[in-house]
Amino acid sequence: MKSARPGSILDGVSIRAFVACVAVACGSLAACAPRARPANAPSVVLVSIDTLRPDHLGCYGYRKPISPNIDAFRREAVLMRDVVASAPSTLASHASMFTSLRVQHHGASVAASSALRPGLVTLAEVLQRSGFATASFNGGGELHRVWGLDRGFGVYESATDSTVSEIGDDTLAAQVQLARKWLEGVGSRPFFLFLHTYEVHHPYTPAPERLHAIEPSYAGRLPDRISIRLLEKINSGQRKLAPGDLEHIVAAYDAEIASADAGFGELLDLLRRIGRYDSSIVVLVSDHGEAFGERGKVGWHGDTLYDEQIRIPLIVKLPGGQLAGKTVDPQVRGIDLAPTLLSQLGLPVPLQFSGTAIDFAGGAPDHPPWSVATIEGRPQGAAVRTERWKWYEGRLYDLEHDPGETRDVAALHPELEHELEDRLMASLRSREIAVATPVAMPDEVAQQLRALGYLE
Ligand SMILES: [Zn+2]
Image 1 (cartoon, helix red, strand yellow):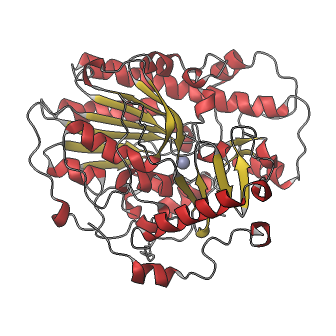
Image 2: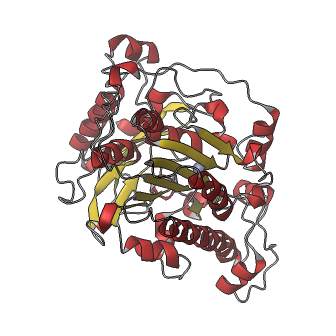
């Protein structure tokens, strides 16, 4: 019975055994050196709005009109309907997007105080070596350069080392202003711009006017600003929610989305103003979701691999508005983003990458039908998911008939359990398991991680 061995995917198979049995196809940058960039290569703008649930965007079906700019952008872009992150946490998920590797293979983990494994090639490095000007303006914390995701960026500014010093000031609009100055110096070169914000991440600190626009009347006792401490009390049972309180917390989260959406609109306006919108690939993505009542958790992520925490939005505008308005329904994964972008640019995809380029036009009929997600610091707690099934902690969920993942149906489908377990093991064995790359965390990074609720 698999229920007798919950979370036992790696039990009896040591990490060391993985290291010994794996051949890495391409771990070094030198071995993966791309060819010179093609003429007229489009630029790439990658925007990660941290902690953004897809089902809180109008273009993914949300009924509140809080994302007008993203929804309009979607009409000019391809929307991936079913997207799964590699982890429900910031560093591990972004590292997977940038290296096209699963968490066990890239090694970047705040929980393990480990930076990105040396010798891995990142998307930014490939683009930089291909002649792109590269820059990132990000929220820092789990994306601070100490974790290694700055590789390949000519400019890498985190909120912790710029004029944006408070969590509440970490807005997408502020990152766009920093990007504007950088873009002025880029000239006509192709560029790779990576913007990231914790604006939507807890604590939820919405501007009063945005909150009141979404929630005109709330008579409860919770404050308008939802702190990490308050969420901790709620999630530990010390503070009970009254009727209307959960909706109020969701409204505060939604108000932060509305603000990030406005920042996204400013970015699109900027790109149009400098004449780089139409020719560029523009990507909107997030790194993980957020629980709002599922499994008793409110305003939280990082601790389970249920869909509310690992599903993310992914919307890609191609040069010239190709395939505008198209929807890709099959499941795709965070690790697919980097190979997708390189393929669109006509650049070789490093053998290190374990993701598969998304076939926008064909609806990805041959796309690998499984995804793997992992909680940082708990490599044995991986989940494997297909469009219909998820195997997690020794239980099997039928996502089609039970999207809330509440009923274990493993006893009804023993063959699926073995198939998914085999798939997971094969995925993990496909690359070398990373050993920790210890990080000495600067005080300002520890301080910000505390403010974001990641450290005690
Ligand atoms: Zn995050």
